[in-house]
Image (tube, rainbow, N blue to C red; front, side):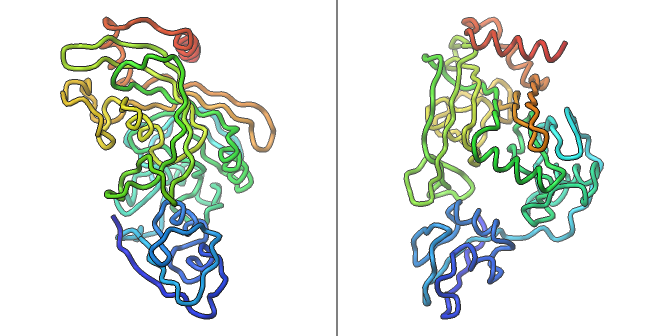
Length: 341
């Protein structure tokens, strides 16, 4: 958790939008950063969460949360290997390795995807639509220990259009996830709003509160694995994101009592036996399919990325317990096999 600071609205500030005030007074580095903090429930006006378009009044007490420390130096390029699947003058499609953080923060000042992109492209050849050097090229994110396909933008035009396409839900993002327990239905939709957890600001949770944001995940069952002496069985699913909330799939699957195998944070419904984690110390979650229209040419681009070796080994260990692939499972594994040939 960061530090809580406060600001009292003065007469000249009256009727300013909340996000504008926060940026104008330097409480956050930019209006986009202010809006993000408001959306994440980090800003309170007279003790209540208000929307970013709220017009402040003289005397309003604003309490806001900031990180304990900012990145203390200019972000520079670092020679970090990138698995690039497609690149042109406007964008990059890459497969992010597990353990790579997307951008610098107080906990990760270097060694991030942004550092790698700066080394590969040069800072002047990455989009900077967010106005922050530590976000160069970033249009969406994957968690540190989530692997797989993601987009980066080189031009500002591409960056803006890609972020709008993601917001408009026309970028098809699919994830392979192995979860605890056997899901009986072949398909499902989780429509449950997400906000910061009430008692732990580092966690997200399904909540019905003023700061909650819409979150929709659909899934298809690909394969089921029978229960063992120390577990309740497993289900391999294909998840599709319709929104992009922080830790969305991890939070939604915990909410359904089917948390991800290897999950270290969202474990309230986790089976007690540590052996049920199948030796993983990170979540079994891989961005395996990405389809979108090129923001400048209009060409439809589609990519498939097979599982990394550690996750592939987990599935192989479960193979004797397989209850059979579903029709969707046969389809997805055929696509993965075709990509690998």
